[in-house]
Length: 408
Image 1 (cartoon, rainbow, N blue to C red):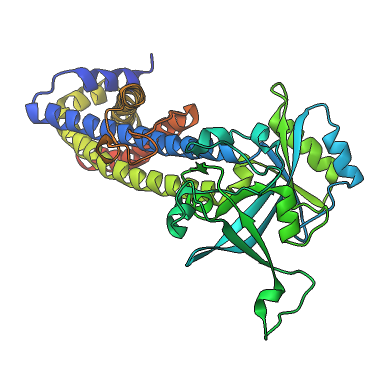
Image 2 (cartoon, helix red, strand yellow):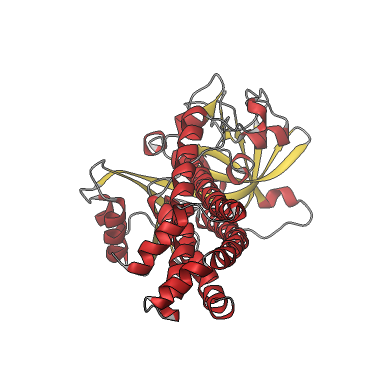
């Protein structure tokens, strides 16, 4: 066994001459342990929120979405797109048309995004899991067109889930100039009725702005014949999403853009990743502060072990070997604190995930989930371990060399 490491290990667990040294060493280990525990728990909570948000978008967004790189709409009968539809990995392909419009209900108005979809949209996504109310996912019948609104939009317009009066929808005519004398003639107007259901995604981007309706109604409102703004794909269960996305991107070239669910909500997840990184950096700073305890512990240990150091010198040990003893001591404190902190952090995350120990908002049901969501990732655990070990080593390397030269 390496002699400096063996001596350092004995120093870590052996009783010192002065009880204060034992106390300071224990405090050092506890400081590193708490920092590692906080890092594991914090990163896991961010992972939990990210997966929760991804689950909400999963029910509304398609697995893959094809849009045109330039412009807003394109012809869905393009030969390249027909080849994509025929791919064996594609289980379902549906056309959608999104555009902004103004809606009015009695005296209330709002700017919204009208999303016209085909009836197969219900099979494409898990929209049924987001619906609330007595109605069902219904876009049209032989008499009227229906519009399924987000919960926040219903509150803004004051319509209620089952509104009796139709919702008036206005969109500017594409090929017409504004008639100053009678501006209403420059707009297309349509009427949407309620199917008795609303959707709740949990994101204001959707709940406060989107209305789902039939694709023919959207085309008529926005003066399009057969154009679409996107093709949305659902893959077969055994298909690899990443592999199919790359395959379709190669087939379509630079004309079209292919996005998975995370890329469709890139801004949301980018913000969450930035928040996670900032929290990680703050915790690293706390870890650095905690490592100052290790420096104090080592300085006290060096003073406590002066006689041992003299014995080692008589046996032929040089300053480098003695410095390595105390350097290993500091690294062992960091390593031990990292392992204990990670184990306790993972255990605490497991208890939170299983029993929901810490609730949100007192558990009164005002949030999407009752307790803080957590998800432990192996990459985060490795990152925490590496961070603690590296910061611990860097924090003691120079002080050990300095103290061994000045105090011994």
